[in-house]
Length: 124
Image (cartoon, rainbow, N blue to C red; front, side, top):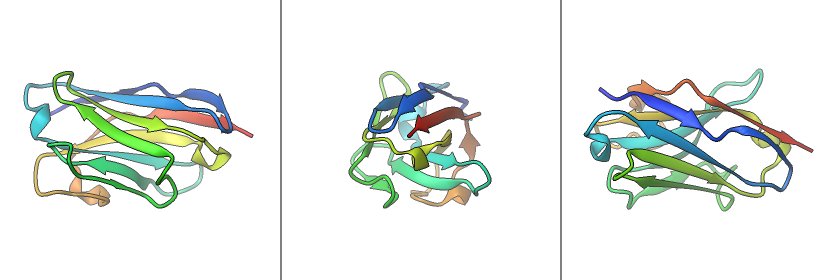
């Protein structure tokens, strides 16, 4: 089992950058696939980015591709989401998710563990 705690959210102007972090408990973090999802006000939670356990496979939603970068540091039990060129429509609560099974990729149902979320607000 793993516990996830997100940090790094906040208020930023459009065009700015933020880096989200997700710290995981436990000694087996390196065996988990990790994902970032987001939920904007009044909308369903949606996929943003994912990275496999080795860090050599990444996938992105079309809406963030070229602007967001997911990475992981297994020595620090942490996954990151670097967000550049932020837009007002990126405003959402961002959630970190983890799974140890088959590669879940974009599928929310494929992730067993979730953090509490961190708010990102982009002002236009």
